[in-house]
Image (cartoon, rainbow, N blue to C red):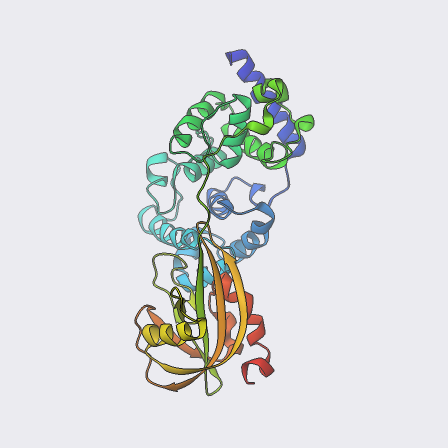
Length: 362
C-alpha cells in the first residue's frame, strides 16, 4: 500500500470503530491496570464470557496493591471457571513485582512491562498502546485474520513464522497518531465483521482495500496448517466420604490447574477398568484404602491440547492416613464449604450432584 492508501485505511477503520465499538467495562478509562487485567482475561476467551469475571475481579482487586496483597487462593477462586489459570498466577506474581519494584505503578515502557510474568508481545503492545499511546502494533488472532485477507498473505496463521510475518504487516498499517484507537478498531472489526466464518464484507469499513475480497478469495484466508487430532484422556475420580466430610487435594502450584483443589484420582491405564483405576490412583496419590460404592457420573471437558473424560465414583474411607504422592495439600471438608476453594472446571461439572444430601449420603 502507498502512504496515501494507508492513511485512508486508518481513517476508514477508526471512523467505523467510533460509530460501532461495543461499550465494554475496560474501555471506560485508560487506566493501565484495568486494561492489563482485561487483556489477560481476553486471551483465548470470548468477550461475553470475560465481562462478568472482569467486573467481579475489579470489585475484589481494584488496583495493583490490592491484588498484590491478596492470597493466591483468593485470586484463583475469583478466576474459577475462566480457565487457563496460569494467567491468574502470573498476574498475581506480576502485581507483587509492580508493588515491590515499581512502587505500585504499572510500567509504561516496553522493557520493564514485558519483563513481568505473563506479559508477552501481545499484552505489551495492547496495554502500552491503549493506555499510553505507544506506537506498538498488536497481533492476535483477529488481526492475523484481517491482515491475511487484506494482503492475501498465504502465511499459515498457526505456523512458526506467523507472528513475525504478521507483525511486520501490522507495523506498516498502524496509525502513529492514535495507535491505541487503531489497535482496538482492528481487533473490534475482527470480532464483529471480519469473522472466521461468514465474514460480513458488506459491513466492512476497509473492504475496498481488501485483496481477498477484490479477488473473491475471502473464504480461502487465513491459511492454517492442519493440526493433529486432539487426544482424549480417561480419568477416574473418587469422592471419598468420611464422617460427613469429603477429601479434596491441591495441585502443585506450577503446571496445569496449578494451585486448584480437586477430588483425587488419575489416568486410567489401557485395558484397566475405571473402578480399578480409581482404587489404584487413590492409593498412589493419597495412600488411603477405600471402597467404591457407586458410579456417580461421566464428565467430559476440553482443554487447549487435549480432552478429558472423567469417570466419577462415590467412595468411602476404610483405612490409612493421607500421604501425598502427587498433590501438595489436602483437606477433609463438608460439602457446604466447597465453595470456599478454587475448583477446576471439570470438577465443577459434577459438584452440583454432591450438594444433594441423598446422593452424597446415600
